[in-house]
Length: 550
Ligand SMILES: Cc1cc2nc3c(=O)[nH]c(=O)nc-3n(C[C@H](O)[C@H](O)[C@H](O)COP(=O)(O)OP(=O)(O)OC[C@H]3O[C@@H](n4cnc5c(N)ncnc54)[C@H](O)[C@@H]3O)c2cc1C
Image (cartoon, helix red, strand yellow):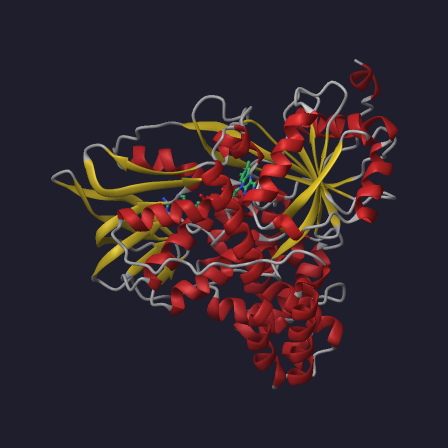
């Protein structure tokens, strides 16, 4: 990963940009993951002068490598945290209403084994409570999907299958890109490839941040009223680099994932089940594949390194224990550290999904904000806003009406049609663009309307076009080809993407970026280095029948 980041820096070393304006910011936010970007958006919308700093590409940390379930509240219910569960479901509904192209409703299935430590009665009660607290009274399970899941799970487990209204976000990195645009539109200054070296503290109060621009190597001291540390898994390290005491420690956990080829009769629902050690494992449809995910102790010295053989075996054994007949074909594997607090975070999803806003004894006007889930980020942001003294209007109530008539398909169709008719983009391509950009697809259509080359696809295998890449450079702060292809338009995460696709995309985009042939080659090299570091190609599968029998 270190190498990948170094090569990424090489990819931006030619970029020229002005220093950060020498003024006193109301808020400097460090970390451009989902938490930092959400805070910067909130402070900018509240009228505060805001600076957002990210050392690599926006959303290139834990945010693009976490599980993609939105609004998991079972652990909150188990702990009796009904208020948090209600807020989480409200935030989930808000995302379903406001970002229907990114956050999708999905049938969720809990599949208990005979040896499960959870009681069926408790699960039933939890689901009943969940329906009462959320807005799911009108939600009806999709019988076809449940039957498919039951068939796949086999007769033994089918008796212990419970359905609920789940939701997923295939690409949290796109959500971050949209919030980033909104933050900048509200006046925030956002800098990627700009590292916060340390917090400047005077008389026990944070008064600014020392930064290094990784493109120009220039160091600056930025003055600020408040400094917010939203560096996720790096939060403790950043405090220690600044000689600031942290009142709590971060548990060394990480999320591990296998992206699998879909197998015949693969469920269309998210399946939550217990792995071979009793901890939660999830299987969900993702990006035309299946994503098998779990949280494990972080035994790896390089926390962003792909899952080890033992971790991959754990996931495959767990899946085979509930779907014994399935042949598991792994496309790629990836992992990320989790910023979770305290003992017991592995066994308790409730602990690790929590969000926390920490004050630091001895350092005023400095906050550390950690969030363990996409929906928990909303509390972290609201709490952070309170501590910063923001006067924000309470969010209006969002009512998401579940069911087939919820309008998501119709809305997507409407955007796709508007894109196609205003830009001569084929309807199928327009639909793919609308699915990733929502209403923003119209902006891309305007850009593409005047030039056929901008309407060209990035490579022959994708429906995404050059105009989307140029839009990402102009409005989403993308500086490198790797950022464009892996996060702004995550085409390079699809199972059929190859180095040849990267080369074609580099040529088609490079023309608009004025990249020389050498710069094109460097960008391609950087994409491939990052792809290799992020998406590990697993070796040949080992025979696990002995371990399964044991
Ligand atoms: C294991 C795991 C389980 C999860 N489970 C769920 C789930 O079930 N449902 C759900 O909704 N969400 C889940 N998530 C959540 C979600 O992915 C994370 O909570 C969220 O992405 C964390 O975002 P962040 O902004 O705190 O961290 P990050 O995305 O890591 O962002 C921190 C950023 O700070 C930057 N940075 C660090 N140091 C510096 C510095 N000195 N200067 C400038 N920048 C710096 C880093 O480069 C990084 O980009 C899970 C995540 C993980 C990893």
